[in-house]
Length: 163
Image 1: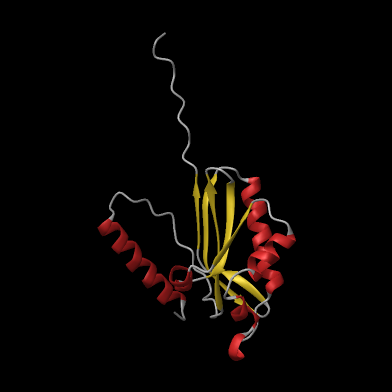
Image 2: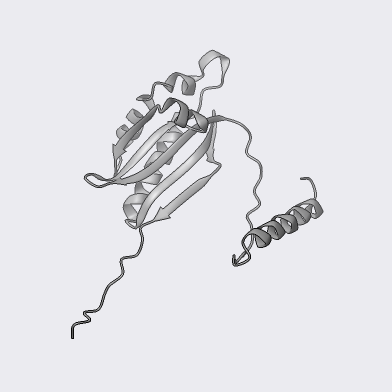
């Protein structure tokens, strides 16, 4: 889309479709963002393990994570060395180095992203899951193109009804 008029028309169309399919939905607006240029796709995720607590995951992103399942895990909180090992520990690391003429990616930025997600999770214990997929990694940085955060369900307190 090149003009604000085109964006407005697309917004109207999207809202109309949602209202038809989900009439009870409340739409507060939409987020319009610049299209990210293609890059090497990686994923950063987090889930809570019953025994270990929050665990971060790193791997090749997009469909490759599902196809190859080439991922590494570490327990939160991470140190810089943990982030470095996670990235270098996947079989697809050579792709991140610039395999077959492709540009290498900024590994330090990926380490920083892992450390920031680790800190975010550590600071927010109500987070149940995080999925940043894909992250487009470039030679000069990286950008998360899609993100999902799921919070723990609130525990309901029951009053003692036997009083």
